[in-house]
Image 1: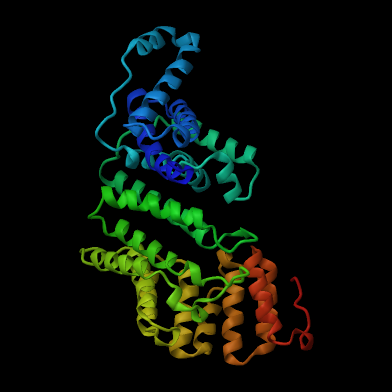
Image 2: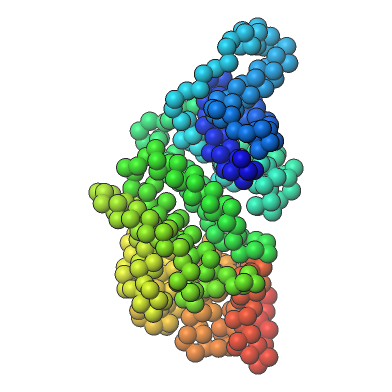
Length: 411
């Protein structure tokens, strides 16, 4: 068995094994360390010696023994350790506790950054080094963040069980938001030289598939998966061979992954069949509308704009208004889009944000204001930490003959 195949299998099994150990022993941090050691051992042994008859049982056995050895070393727990060590290696439970583990990693006592890091480590199976590279921080910094997250969960007295009622609904929203953040970082990296991190996007899709498999009737879960699939289907067309960004209206849509489009579209239809309407369902419907158009010119912008109006009502957010301005400009002209953008100027959440600057530049260019467009393209390029986006914005400015326009001030 090849190493990549083993890696995929371990990524699938690790959260299941961790869930079973946490359920049995109730100590998240110790169990997580034990499972990581078992995964490392499997990554070395399985490609060389072959896959065991029961891979999950193998991992559970090795991880349980590592955990028991660690418990033995703690003198304060000698009696408990002795009793635990004398037990037969635990049987592998039939159930999959991955969803419970995901809920635990997204505990309300943690910040969004810690929830994301802990989810990628415990449920996603990424190493601390991989997570650190994804978010461009030193490994020691990420290790400390993950360690603090485990300590906070322990201090909060979190139990390994699905919350009930309203608390469960609220925690599920957090889980979906964390998966959404992971996907977005993979689809458009917030910093660095590469536009995309396909590994993170694929991991977010895998985890969302897992949640959808366990909650198939939840419309928002199905819609989030649909949104990811429809968005990820464009990945191959989003950059040139040299890594330059290609905007949506210039992409070769024959390069879009039709299997992902078809799966995502079917999920959108299924998610919209329910009585309630959530923000992921509306966003997925917008993505499906773009996917329905064979060319950019065939996009049903009136429908896109109407959907953004709905999204603004149920989940108001300045980024939603920003996107609606683009759709409005397609139906009512660039001046209408610019007028809507003006309503965001006093919003601190978007102050000097490169996306607001770049959209305004785009609409100014469409309106014939080349001097204003040039200035805003240049300011947007300076404001982004993504090298790929910066290169694209600089190239847009260069098309407007920057030599004829003054450099924008930093004010």
